[in-house]
Image (tube, rainbow, N blue to C red; front, side, top):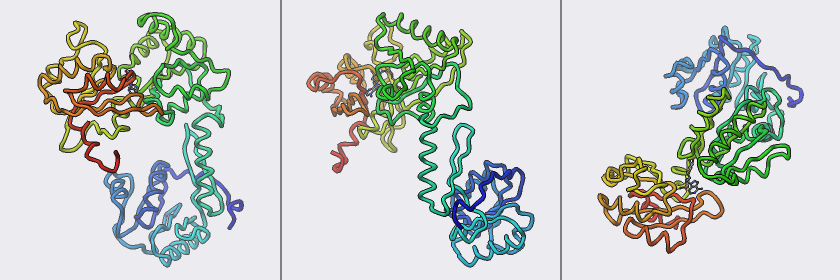
Length: 405
Ligand code: SAH
């Protein structure tokens, strides 16, 4: 049968018996959406994958641990024949047809009486694409539609978001923003952006979008934050959807919660979209796992914006010096030597250190050092902010990987 001759329909399977014969990878792929539809799903198979077992253990599907028998389809509304045996699949399809129950046949789709569309979900929409059994074609079109909906190329006028979205944009590479962040950005009327984060995405915004570049606001630090808060609140109150695009995660040294408080006090609704924080994402890009089994059981993320002995510091550096695990320092380039000294009070001078400047961008640079030499290495290599300093044995693991150097 050709795809265009199928009749595309949405089934309400709530509380209805659906029989899936087979418990392998095909069944495994179909089950989550069936379960989500509210169907009473029964799996018949002498073997099931660990993932299917997980659904059984969670009570989401019922498992009959045996081979298929003809009576199994009694009372079923929908059947999926997903065994690896053509003869059994043919028998199931014939039994289903006799009972006038639609049956998907996984091995030879055209032999079944129903086919599963390539499907996807987006903000309350369900998409299904059929291409007469050409799976690659239907999957490619589905992927394209989802991508277009997510980045806003394909307008979905259903619910224009309101208020303010605090969006964590990731460390800088535009590919490292979350799907949700990207989707909300595409709907923004106003974008308030930081210097750090995926600034390239701003070029893609349509011309009517107003971009406020927080890096160019000509006040001091505190006044700038007030200006940002006021910009968020006033635009949202004027009915515009405001995206506050921040580097990394909004709540990791990002002052995001101050912005949330300002909005909350003004009665402006806020959506928080977490991001890939540079504290963890940037080390990863330099082959530094912030934890590693048998090496580090802890990771502490520290702000280096004030020196260890600064009265404003809230960090107990002597406690950090007593740790064996990983210390990740943000905003620490200028005072790198001071932090190294503070940590050397308790940690060996040859403790590995990795410094990653402008991680995830084309300008990314990595310097491998130790606590003893960090101060001079930072100067010698001309390291400038933004950079991450990772201290601990994990920072030395990459040098043990000959094929990555
Ligand atoms: N909210 C951000 C951090 C803001 S503080 C996050 O979660 O990532 C700013 C500091 O983050 C910088 O001084 C630097 O230490 C670090 N940083 C942010 N982006 C970075 C990047 N691409 N490469 C290296 N360090 C980065």
